[in-house]
Length: 139
Image (tube, rainbow, N blue to C red; front, side):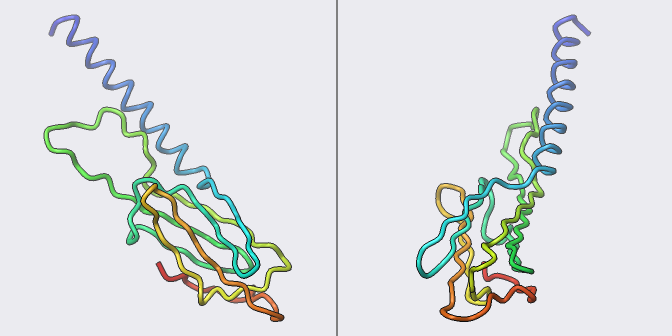
């Protein structure tokens, strides 16, 4: 084995280790989210790059939206993963305002073209918020 080959082997080992650490850190941090409000709805916008609609689970429980994304890495023909830095299992949540009366059963979740998950939760007029329920949101 030449010195160049040893250097390349060490570099690849280091990159793989750093990539795994990076991936684990990403999986242990919550997904970034923005919460927007209009007169008739709340909109939670999560970063969901690389996710598809079937990768996403959204639940509403006790006034909080919970998101779980299980991404899959598509293999690329002729390439080997050197730096596996993207987390595959991601979680996030956002607490809805305590005074918001919402209808979680009418909520919808959509992955946009730019890689965000938008969860639209309609408000209801003059009703108490349904915070005692655990509801799966349609994706």
